[in-house]
Image 1: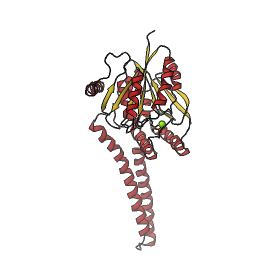
Image 2: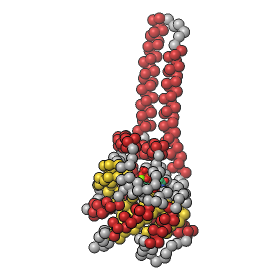
Image 3: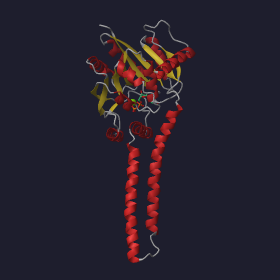
Image 4: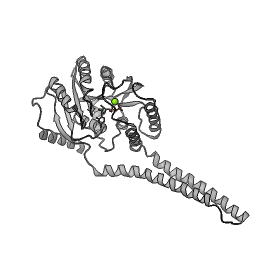
Length: 340
Ligand code: UDP
Ligand code: MG
């Protein structure tokens, strides 16, 4: 039987304390997998602490580790994209958080699901440890809203913890949009999906990169990337307000005909003007959200820039490549894929 290949992809930003604790766990799990040639690819997403040095130490002691360093912080979604672009075409990929919240001990379960023929195996959180009720409640609300609004099926309580078969990965790579709502992109790809319930653990070290404001923007990103329902809602809101205004107009005319037309109604006038002004601004802002994203898309900038790439030493003849050569080769590879 031909040996299957699996690449574990981990995006990390300021995870100097977590990585040394996570890596041995991944290593021991991968060592126990039968007939799977595995690699671990770490992406340093513009960390400001010692993460890159820590990664280099891991690569020095483990020949199956591959490193990628982006030129600055591009955000988790872009960092993951950079990693996925680098994975060999015949390899499946497993995405993991660097902070140990997604337990690597579940990897064998993902791999058996893949062997059973599933292309898109995702972990669904049944329990979230170390996260406050507010985060849990808003996350719950978000998944329900996006589930209703989006035509693409986006499974609830599912993060980036998942395994993609080679063909699902190839499909995902074709989606080059700038505003990358990964949960949605994974869902868009489709194929044979399977959910694996798991307990989301607390971070093993460090602090979450996602505060409340970032999460709110993330939610907006998700909704605007995968649904135009808000635009339609604006239309209906406009229709509703117009209908109310019409009824109110009739009332005013009838009242004026019956009782004459004494100059009054300043409060009602102000109410109507302010209400209309408010709804118009909301609708404009909504259009602006979409227009802004269209603008970002139109610029066609690359999704990320690579500063350094260190291929795994295992099975690779050349060792560490020099910075310029590596990033050149890599951007060419990416350009080639984008052209497809
Ligand atoms: N991450 C990243 N780039 C960023 C922010 C986060 O690569 O700009 C990584 C981070 O190192 C971690 C994962 O994304 O591996 C999830 O981030 P975090 O744990 O901070 O988010 P949370 O689990 O709290 O939602
Ligand atoms: Mg986390």
